[in-house]
Length: 214
Image (cartoon, rainbow, N blue to C red; front, side):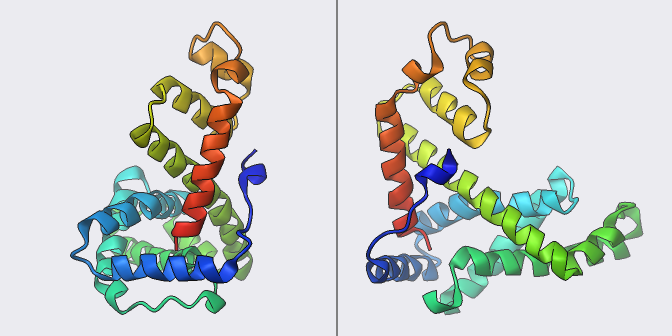
């Protein structure tokens, strides 16, 4: 379902100009509104990367915070070049590099070492694992995008939270309508409750995010 919501904007140059404008906003670390949006959008993706490579929840949270502190120091000098790929591709590579550093540091701290951390370091360093990570990262990004669109709809429009939950279960988690109806105790069909009109609004918000996110 997520794939059907994907799509490229017709005017790539206009998209690049928009994204460059967004980047200018987060290059100013005093712009708290833009930084909050930036963090809310990408922190789940970084946290997922940490969990994927074996960090427990507290360590993954620590890793995410450390990376975003680093980004806050780095972003004022960051230059967005669309020809070099998307920002999330750059972030994926930086996440992997920092995960290597983080796991190696943990390995040196005997008290906190996990039995599989050395293997995780080897996995992060392996070219085939990097390719697999890239595919998983891109798939997780699509889920992040849909989740962000759902949150935005809930905050900006009069949509019942239950309907947002239904859409999240159907689209992000991939649950069947029957399972969603059972778990949420919905007496009528899920397709009737999460109407096509809500799906249309979700599609539009996803496309807006695609245009405005770097």
